[in-house]
Amino acid sequence: MTAYDPNNIFAKILRGEIPNHTVHEDERTLAFMDIMPVVDGHCLVIPKKPARNIFDVDPGELGYLAQVAQKVSIAACTAFGADGHTLRLHSGESGGQEVFHIHFHLLPMKTGVPLRPRVMGDHGILAQHARKIRDLMLLA
Image (cartoon, rainbow, N blue to C red; front, side, top):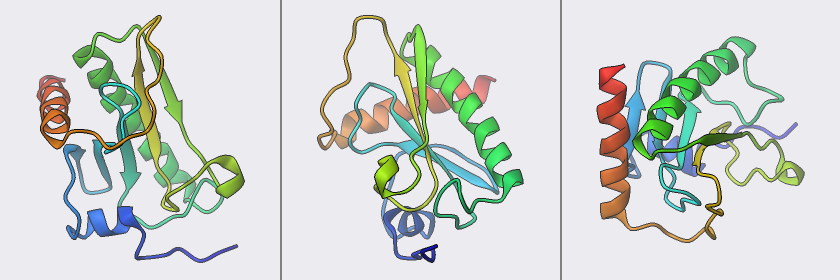
């Protein structure tokens, strides 16, 4: 198994070296807007503890990550009027993983609305979307 790379983009985000549009943060996790959103409200949830993917994450951390993903997903779906949801976890290059720090993609879905291509999002819009989700999380 390949070792965890402490210079991956998510590790840099966790260290504050790269800015992000934070949705939720606690002592164990960080949730933030994907900078190449395929739907409005597309978030990522990552653990603060290093782990490449599902094959090497501590089961307790994975369970907690899933709990946080559920809370953020509920807020994101409410914020964007979604009637469905997709939760993605890619593990390994052949599994579609691009950043080798375990993370969930949270996709609030609407019937009849297709996914957009992965292109860089507008940071002003991403900041507004993060604020909408954060505000709902504060009410929960």
